Image (tube, rainbow, N blue to C red; front, side):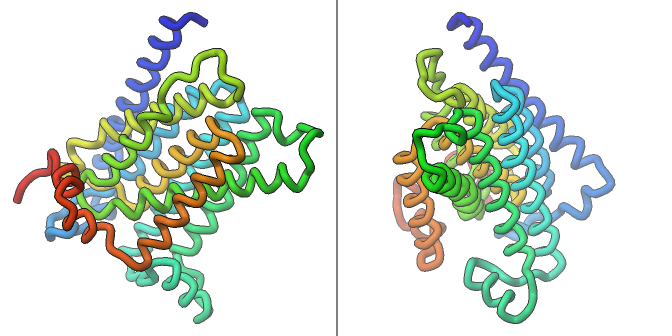
Length: 298
């Protein structure tokens, strides 16, 4: 396949992810569930969670179509749709009075004999992450590589699943102000979306690049209304984008890269239990300016 053909194909893929996102958000906002997805944001304004399921559909569709193999397509569908679905379930449960927040809150609810919606979300995304990582390694031939021990192969799948689930959580941690999570996702997806070219040694590298492209295109399509405070990602949209971003990363890297990424996302999650990212951003001039860029002033 020539460079021109790949470039045109990737441009089409990005347009499809963006267009699919806009169409899906519009459809959800016109549906009979539109009123149930309305929420009050940090300023007291009414916003719609339609962005969450809409961006899940658009980004996942782009990732699946740009997969390059049936195993990768299944991995993208599993990661994106599962993360979006359980995230939306948590959003709905939150509106009905679910109070368990953070890892400590979920564990506390479990100790009291109650399975919180947040814990269901964690279990769902973790299971989908492991399944998706296994499919990626299957596509790369690593699960059938007899040169590696079964334990090492399973360990690599577990680490990959942790990266997918952890990235889904991290993106959700940034979804506290209009446009913030979408900006984080766009910046993180930029290096991953670079075309690896036909010389790449990993069979899934091109699929990973296309997944990152689909994620950034979907995020860009939703950015304007998110910054204007008309729509918001919610757990559903943030988890789906994060899971797909994690999938794109493990599709392009090996065991060492997966371990480094897992350590990074684990550190961010642990830090969020102690420090407020919103406060840190507000107190850091450069981060504050980037965070407020494009946002509707009140």
